Length: 256
Image (cartoon, rainbow, N blue to C red; front, side):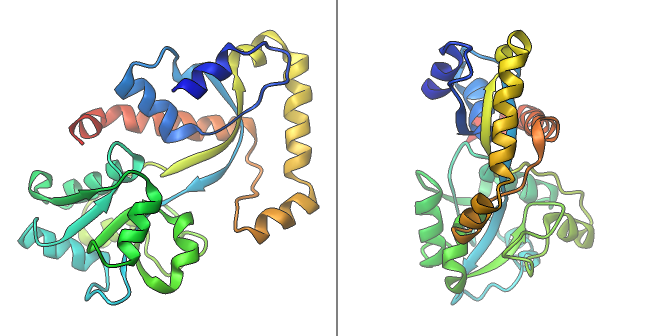
């Protein structure tokens, strides 16, 4: 919240670019912490990283599918430990899935962690039965986990064998709802775009050229980082859609 507030306070001269996890952090700071800005105050130039919540378990756990997880939790909601970062998109996705499957979410045995890194380590180390956390960070731990479900409409790159929550819902008879785990990338203030259009176009054009640079793409791919150029319109549409879903389920976030 401090960083986003600071970015909005800078001169509209094109020399300040915000690099951030736009969602869920801007929505969460507004919905939970009374931030002094609105979602519409930020204009996304490009959000190339769309991290997806991945439900996973350690390789030595006797869990082989997300359907098995749901069936186990239906019989006894406290029978499995679930690792997650509270007040996060991952938490919302976890709760929406169990709620849609008809599981009493108040009876779940949830273990919370202060960040995605600790939650991933706990999952890979078998300290929890199932972890719900951004999938990109699991890539270096692929040999230590079994991916169970990707909270997305399309298969997740790097974990293509993990069924999507949409597919799981169709097979189990419920309609899955989810938010992007994180949307990371470049933004400016909407005021800059509206009040200084020439400066905005210069800045946005520079970021687009850099994003499409073959040298930069090669470097990012070598670090397993996102390279997609979605552009401002698609990026803002995804950002505002995520905000709307988080706002719709604010009770879940406040209850976490």
